[in-house]
Picture 1 (cartoon, rainbow, N blue to C red):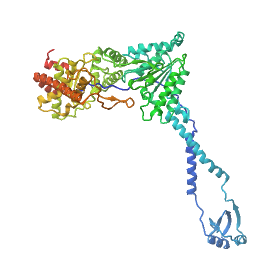
Picture 2: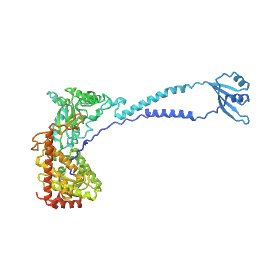
Picture 3: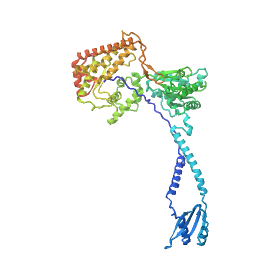
Amino acid sequence: MTDNKIPTNNNDTTKKSESTPQQTPHPFDAHTLMWILMFFAAYTIFSGLFAQKTPEISYSDFKKAVISNQVSSISFKGDQIYGIYIEKDADKTKTFHTVIPPTTDTNLMPVLETNKVNISAKSSADPQWLSILIGIVPWLLIIAFFIYSSRMLQQKMGGKDGFMGFSKSKARLFETKDNEINYDDVAGVEGAKQDLQEIIDYLKKPEEFNKLGAKMPRGILLMGPPGTGKTMLAKATAHEAGVPFFSISGSEFIEMFIGVGASRVRDLFKEARDKAPALIFIDEIDSVGRVRGTGLGGGNDEREQTLNQILAEMDGFSVGEAVVVLAATNRPDVLDPALLRPGRFDRKVTFELPQQEARIKILKVHTRKVPIELNFDYKELASMTVGFSGADLANLVNEAALSAARKKADTVTRDDFNQAHDKIIMGSERKDLLNPSERKRTAVHESGHAIAALFLPNSDPLRQVSIIPRGRALGATEQLPVEDRHNYTQSYLETRLSVMLGGRVAEKIVLDDTSSGASNDLEQATHLAKMMVTQWGMSDAIGPIHFKVGSEHPFLGYEIQQEKDFSEKTATTIDQEIYRIIKEAEQTTFAILLQHRDDLNRLVEELLNKETLDIHMIEAMLKPKD
């Protein structure tokens, strides 16, 4: 139930401002033409189906009517006769038509002439205009459909060159006037700024470097965890240098069509050369720059062709071309060695999670437009956010502002930041989740963590304890490190193990039973003990030896199998050492909780009453020794 892992936000907070010209559609485009043709075709079909039909009579009745002088006029049209029939008992007339039998009737014309029937004839062929229309309409429909499909594909691909526009570069161009991010907006990465300052000087005055024969790095690789400001710093570098900034993600090169990725690379570098001096930024370059020969398509797949084209373009820069390529990744270990050789991405800038002073600067940048209460303690907030990236801190400020807005407050207070911090770390509150028995067990469990953290030496200071369910956790015990740690001592890790086991031990002492609520604690404790034994040399039985705990595939990028580079006997010894370390930590936790059994009981009761206790409330109640 105690989760000390701090989630990171993978989303960069870079604000992209880009003005895209809007195309005014032509009032009579292919879409309109298609609808007109469809309407005409439907009208022709339905007019033919629902037109009033002339009554048909038999040929024998027709001849009888002629002999009876009931037919005034007829018209021949092919093998059909159309005429006007006069009824005997009335002066009414009606039209009719009949079909001439296939045999030749030589008596028909004399009978018609004898009875003075007006005779006319019409051609049975279709009108010329109708023949032309029937021949043209299908082609017009095909052409309209082709134009309409091309327009739709153009809109989907985002290109301006019609059907073939998808092979053009999809990089977003930020001119100097559109790029408003500068170095003052990027805090906490002072070392990276210094590394890139030389590039800024080169892009501003490339001739001063060229006259001395100096060759600037053509490629700079920005490496670091997600959300540490790689994209934002690249954009700020272009602003400081006053040059156009081409931004594209590595995945945007790849399409289902073979050769499109390489074509887009060529087009991108051509545009950058035309606007030199310029800066190209390729985000997430590991999506196309992974080690070649590891994919399912061998050496001929689309990703590898795109990578080959990037390598060729970076080799093709001439001395006078002031174009610098920046690329960002959080997986430098999977990149192809050809990308990292001199002449390509031979300079590397490392980004780390911000330390306390850097977090203070980042928080001040993100709270510029946020009304903060007077005398706000940025140092305290920075100490609460160990392990947060710049993007996480921006999200924290936004969540705090949302919390204040929901309360219709005028300023954002410390309580708003505390609520936002807890929401980001543990999730939203779910107070109706626990039944009374589970609530009591959760209070015992979290109290065990808290007492162990409060009284064990080398433990991180306790911040608060809560039995309010959040996210997937039924309760939480939060500790704040005194300082940002990069190395961990064995005594500190042993104390961490004891605190992790505090919840399970407290359940055993107070309730004389254990539950599945300690599952995550046991998982973390086992992993930590395994690292101590196999990689950090903190076991006398194993000694200062490093063993692999897994292998990482360079293409898939995650652990796919466990490889053992040690014997079965050594594996047994490792298991025994892991068990010993965890068992000793459990015994230490038993001893400290039994020693402070009264404090444990008081903390359980207070948690059941108030649900959440901070360190000041706990210290006032327990009065622990230093």
